[in-house]
Structure formats: C-alpha cells, structure tokens
Amino acid sequence: MLVLYLSHIIEQIGNGGAVQLTHYAKAKLQEEKVFKDPVHRYVHVRDQVIWDLVGTKEFQRLRRIRQLGTTFLVFHGAEHSRFSHSLGVYEIVRRIVDDIFAGRPEWDEDERLLVLCAALLHDLGHGPFSHAFENVFELDHEFYTRQILLGDTEVNAVLKKVSAGFPEKVSQVIEKTYPNKQVVSLISSQIDADRMDYLQRDAYFTGVSYGHFDMERILRVMRPRKNQVVIKATGMHAVEDYIMSRYQMYLQIYFHPVSRSAEVVLNNILKRAKQLSLAGYKFKHEPTHFLAFFRNSITLDDYLALDESILFTYFQLWMQEEDAILSDLSRRFVNRKLFQYIDLDPGVELDKYQKLQELFKQADLNPDYYLVHDTTADLPYDFYRPGEEEVRVPIFLEMKNGELRELSRESIIVDSISGRMKRDHKVYFPLDFLEDNSTHPAVKKQILALLQGKGKN
Ligand code: NI
Image (cartoon, rainbow, N blue to C red; front, side):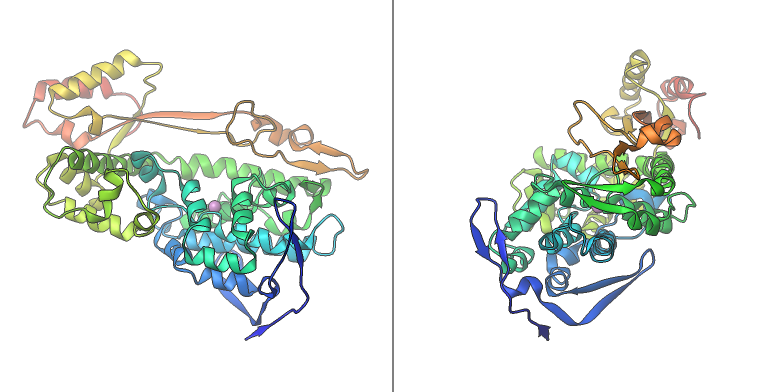
C-alpha cells in the first residue's frame, strides 16, 4: 500500500523544458523496510522507487558478484557482495540528505530521489571478477551501468516511471557529468559515500583493524554548498583518519600480492579460453556463456547472464580440458595453487625480464601465461592531478569565517601523503613447475637462480 502525494512536482530536464513528475517519485511505503547490515546496523527504505529498484533482477544480480573479487582467497571473510556495498552507499547518502542536508537552504530537496537512486545503482554494471574480466574482454563496467540504466531492463522501467528523463539523469550523476556537482560529489569525490562504505565494509569482512574511522562524525560536519560539499573545519581530524584508513587499506588489502596472484591466474584462464576458442579449439563442454565474449559481439543479455558462480562452474569444467595450459590454470584457481612472485620492474630490469622470458620458453613454459608482470598504483590523496582521466574533487574545509581551505594545506598528516603515488611492480610465476626437475632441470636451475634472493616465498 502506498501513501500517495497528490501534489505534482515540476522538474526541469536537460533541454530546459518542464515535465511533470508522476506522484510515484514521492510515493512512500506505508511501513519502512529495513535491511540488517553489519556495517551500518540498518539500511532504511521508505521510498517506493528505491524498494522497487532493489527488487529488479539486474540489482539482485549484484548478490552473485563479490565486492572484492579474488580477495576471498587471501582473507576468507571477504565474501561480501556488490549488493551489500550498494545498499550501504545508498544508506550513507540517505543519512546525509535526510539527517544532515534536509532543510538547509543550499540543498535542493528535488535532488533527493536522484542522488539516492544514483547511490544505489552506481555499481550496477560490474561483471563477475570485474577487473580480470574487463581486462581480457576489453569491457568497461561504466558502459554497462549506462546500458542497464537506459536499455530495456527492469531498472529502466522503474526509473522511467519517475519521469521520462530520469534514467538519463541517474546515469549522468554516476558518470559525473550531471550539472549539479554537489550531487555528483556525494557519490564520487575524495570523500564520498562509495569510499566511505567500501573502506568500512571491506575492513569488516576481511577482519583487519585498519579501515575504521568515525563516519558518524564526518557525516555530521558535511555541509552542502554551491556545486560542492564541504567539511566544517572542526571535523578535520575525523577526515584525516578516513584518509589514513584509505591509505592503509590499499596497501594491506587491495594490493595484497597474493590476491593479485589469484587475479593473474584468473586473467590468464580467460585469456587462454578466448585464445583457444578463436583458434577453433574444440572444448569438451561448449562454453556457451562465453561465446559472445570470445567473438566480441556482446548483448546486454549476454552480459547480465554472467555471474561468479557461472565462472566457477566453467573453471571446474575446464580442469578436465585437453589443453594443458587451460586445465592447469583452472586447477590452480579452483584449488588455490597460485603463482609465487618477486619484486621486479621490467621497466628497470628489462634485460633480466627478457632473459627470464627466453628461459621460460626453453623450459616449455609459455611466458604469456606463466611469467606475468603485474603493476599497481595508488594515490592516497591529491588536490590536483594534471592529466589524470579521473579527477576527483579535493576536500575543502570550511573555516569559522566561511573561508574554504583545501585539506592538505591545513593537515600536516594529509600533506605528507598528498600527491605521492605508490607504485608496485611484481612478476608472477609457478614456482612448483620450476622446482619440478623431471623436465629441463638445467634451464630451471638457471631460472631459479635468476629469481632467487628477490621478494618472498
Ligand atoms: Ni562502489
């Protein structure tokens, strides 16, 4: 049952024309729905639109995609899904707009439903094991988010009931092209609801002690200003804590060398399957779910049909394949027999890397699949990044006199890590193969000597 608001709201759309919103935009559930959440305790839903979006099949699909990809192979608790993260981001934004921003002259209440929908749907286009999947098939989850919002989907049908131009507006907020940057920065800036949720959620589910900060305090000191959201200067220390927690989570969790090893193996399984398929290899089990991806003729339905359980099913089937590389890599992923690694930057030690490639070939180990350079980079905080494709709005503190000051100019802690890019290069390889002396013992000895004394394990 709905409580209907009969007043009609006038909405300005992009082309300047005025359209009437249906009363659906303001429809409230008669009773509030709550989701129990380990991070935010409860996620509250009163809006009919939000409730209907959660019930769509495209949003439910996010239950079958892990938030942290292969990290569960290192931190076994990290089984949480993009579904729980998306609800969490929605809940943070809901608290900001309903508890902190509501009634303030700088906040436009007409943006409320838009920003809630964008928060809920911001990761809608993520595929299974996003990173490796997008890399091998040259896909972009943001493209698919847009397709799902605007295409023939259940999500689109719900959004369209709000108004004809509403799906496009939600898409613009997620793509950061929406004119009102205040709305955009709630979802993506250097201190946005997306990051605030994933830092806490990932810390909770991995079980690490970093990643915690006083979000309640940060929310209390957030203020809507023209085209941006600022932080009252009294909240600076809570923000410092947030920046540090982000810095530590990247080093300890997101760039963990062993989950990157799993990612490397996963990447190469997909790469091998694609290569075999294009070369006309006859699979024992036709990989029907993947054919469109191998041929690069992907429809939205093909994309939405995949999830992580389907990928795992294929990996189990591929363990039985004739192709030695595909079956070996699949076995490694399923049974967690991952690659070892050393710190090596081919940009600096090119000779050594090329020598290794040569020796791997001599040892009958295809270096395309068994000698992999992987690099990560992170910028914990920055106020300006020239040439960066994804420019994030810096954090501004609002002083008592109303003056705005960029965070790193006020905080010694933030200043010390500001603009510092952390880069890490590793080379991954199957140590068990190299230690197996039944074939090419002399070459393998040479390889091991080259790899020795670097990195761990
Ligand atoms: Ni997200």
